Image 1 (spheres, helix red, strand yellow):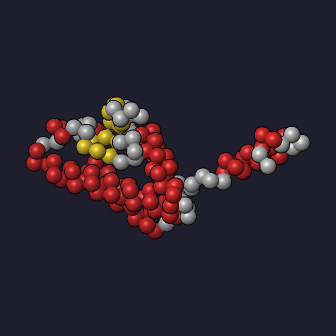
Image 2 (cartoon, one colour):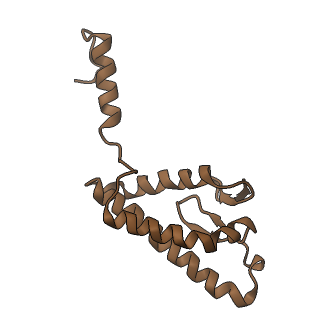
Image 3 (cartoon, helix red, strand yellow):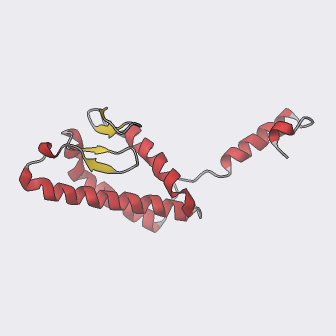
Length: 142
């Protein structure tokens, strides 16, 4: 039965059906497993090194839930290899985190949606002055 065709249904039943439908099919992005905790700990430890790079605009948050070297000129040449390694390690952990959250929800096909949710969450929580990609892919300073 489609909710829109439920002419004889009570308003309460319609509300409950709508509410249940909105809950069913949503990922628990705050789910925790040992693997998720390990990825989060690794990312938190790395953040100490990434924070100054966000602050000076060298790196930014991408619209797809990862980070990228935004301005190589903001990093001394001697440190660029190290920064690239930090960015790669962070992105590897982020990809693994999104995959594990989807797996923990028993819905591996939701990985893309989980990544999109986190992409917006990272941007929303970014500090003022950090860069992020807007929906068109252009770098924007928060």
